[in-house]
Image (cartoon, rainbow, N blue to C red; front, side, top):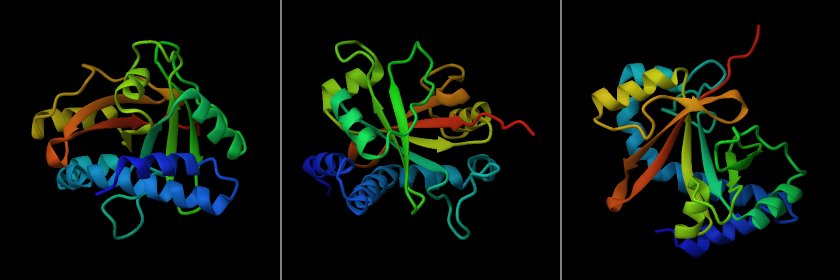
Length: 206
């Protein structure tokens, strides 16, 4: 079982001067996050319609796998100072265009192994937003698992009707970079819960 100190160490390592150390830390965080939601995803992917929705267009998983790094992104919440340190160490990737009503600043980290992380922090460390609340309660750590879908409304409806899960929002809302999103706080192993974010990417113009 992974200790909280391991998560903290891997997050710190995302700002290491050595790119190989950063990539190793990203892999560890990715495997930890995706591992928590793997039992849930296996259940959902048994539904053919839901499975088709998780592999839209360019977000195809590698051949022979039920889902893969291209379909899942692990969201890591960090304090504002850690956010800036990690961003600087990784050549200052662009900040996502997050709707102003949401308590988040974020950027993406991509690695050659197709591991993808979202690094998130709060806009208001003393506020009552979702990220601020997570940091206050748990400290820095894996905050959510993002699953890309072709139609967030239909994916949400499938989980509601066929799996008995209630979405956090009654309807999809605007997310970062023109996406549409909704969330589920779903039961995980050992009585824990995992925050799953469905993300419908903005359609590219032809």
